[in-house]
Structures are given as C-alpha cells and as structure tokens.
Image (cartoon, rainbow, N blue to C red; front, side, top):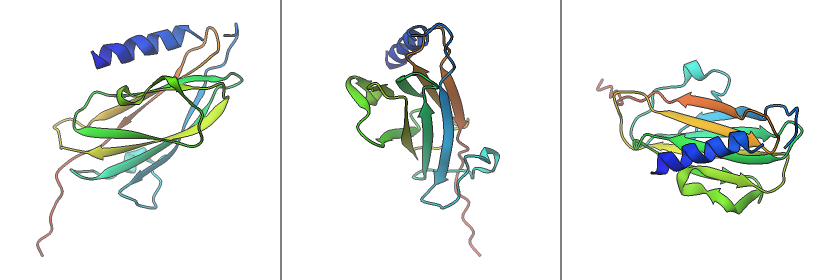
Length: 161
C-alpha cells in the first residue's frame, strides 16, 4: 500500500507541473558521509565503503526548481534493512502535503532548498539496498529529476591479530 501511494504521488507530481517550456529541476548530490567520517563520497560513489549493521550514511542534496518553485521530494526505500530519516534546512516544507513516514516532502512556494537524509543499516542483505530520490517542480510539461544510490553492505571483517 505504501509503495502504491508513493508511485501514485510520483506520477501525479510528474504530470502536475505550470509552464509550457519548463526546465527539469536540479537534484544535486552534495554530500555522502559514512559513520561521522570527514570524507565526502558525493563525487566518488564507487569508493563508498561497505557498510554493516549499525552503520550510518548521511546523504545531502541541493534542490533547485530551475526557474520554477519546487513541488515535492520523494524518497523511495523498498528495503526494510535500512531506516531513513529526513533533515531540513529551514521551514520550507508543507505540513499539508508532506508524508514523512512514507518518504514524501511537499514544499511551500520556494525555488530552492537543501535537504538531508540519514540512513541506518539495520541488517545485511544479499543484494545491496538502493535508495531512490525524486524531485519535481511546479512547471508544466517537465520531467522530474531522479537519483539512485546503491549502498554497499556486508558483514564487518574482524582482524584478530
């Protein structure tokens, strides 16, 4: 049910955009940090270390409507092995159009903002979990922006030397 709601909301968001020749909104990955490390993997995702149970990953984005106001940001997490939580910079979200427990954030007439997500690994699975992010603006005939982040997971190796 939750996944169907997210898919329906995302479909509506893609078709519910307000200018004839709109530009795609900008969804820029600005930070990917693991376990309070100072290393930012945003530009080197292929070097992201393998995470295990209890590890955390902080993901941040710059969101820009590209000439239009932002409509919504959606986080799709189909993996129960990861717990996610949103962090916002400012009070730009709409309480009426947001459903944070289902990964949907609605915005109040703003052209740009920043948003962060903290993900905690709850269990290691055979396949690496993927978090999907979607951004839409209030422009007509625009496609939303999307980004997928695969998180490498595995058991911790203990060195008994």
